Image (cartoon, rainbow, N blue to C red; front, side, top):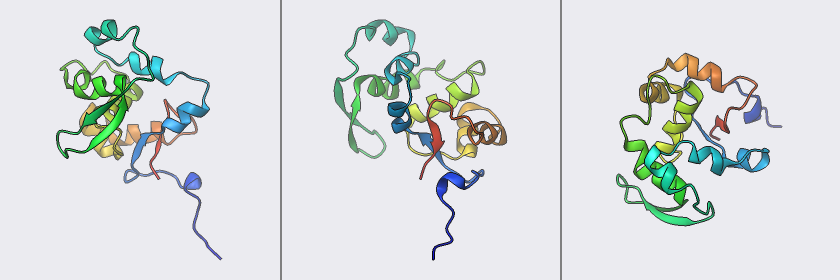
Length: 143
């Protein structure tokens, strides 16, 4: 008989890695593409106002040379918008900052301490926000 606790019942800690759960967006009554567009820089918000969200492109990770298929919006967020100085500012809300940090790193899982370094907020505050009963923008523990 297994005594392992199901992952959904384990309380996240500072060692818990989080990510954007895109399946959460599929199950929710929210439009991910609209939300992603809001994270584009001004230049690309105008350019991609009418883009078909289903268009996919090959994205090459410059660190690993790994090629993945991404939506065009995600690709431009990673390759251009996330590189801009004003992508993350002290005025960016905590949840949007965390979401943008995941977009910038290709949604690779990050722990609260890693997120804290990227968005300039305390790791414990990030953990409290992400481990509460409400799921913000599909940000959940990575299993």
